[in-house]
Amino acid sequence: MNPLKISLSLKRRNYKMRKTLKMFLYLIIGAAVGLLISSTARSIGGDVSTDRFYLGVSITTTIVAAFLIVLGIFQYRRLLTVAKDYVKYMDEDSYDKYRYNKHNEIQIYGVIGFVLSLVSLAIPLITYFNLSVLLFSFIVYIVSIIFLTRTTKLINKLYPERNLPQPSDKNYTDKLLLASDEGERHIMTTALYKTFSLTQVGIFVGILLLIAYSMLTGESQIFSIIILGIIMIISNTKYYSEIKEK
Image (cartoon, rainbow, N blue to C red; front, top):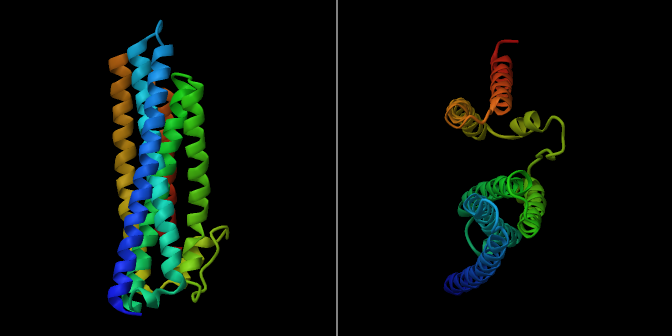
């Protein structure tokens, strides 16, 4: 097939994808604005400013989560389409780079969408209950779980020629490292160490912020501080136990 025709075909598909994505996003924003207006109107008589703030945070995080999940789904479908017959779109070296980067990009969309949807669901459950917002957040949360579950199996579809373990395998990490070459193992271990270090700093800063919040507002965050402290202890103990000489 003519490379120019392939390029034009890809551009048309990308344009249609962006157009559909925009329409879906506008639909979500319209629904969210309607929910915000109706819910705020019903909240008169209570602490309206606080209710509106929590409601706004919940709706905003739900919209962002929905957008990321939809974007991830489009990228997921696009990647599988290319993977079926990549020679129509690019050479082998370009495809190797494309599928590797797209797989990681889709994982980011899935994880962030899941976390944001969980936060948006927690707000109406804990602070200000609103049925319509709760249902809106719950639907996005369920979709994010389904999408995240599907993305965990994506790597096996992208690399059918390699003997990669299933995500449900109890020794998944060890088998994945064995199936990877030296360069891949170096990239993974470097990324994991940087992530571990960042997580420890994040937990420590989180504990300090919770202590400051408790002192300034008088609202005790002891339970959260204890939980974060336990997570920090366990993760550090696990890490240094794994790397010590056997």
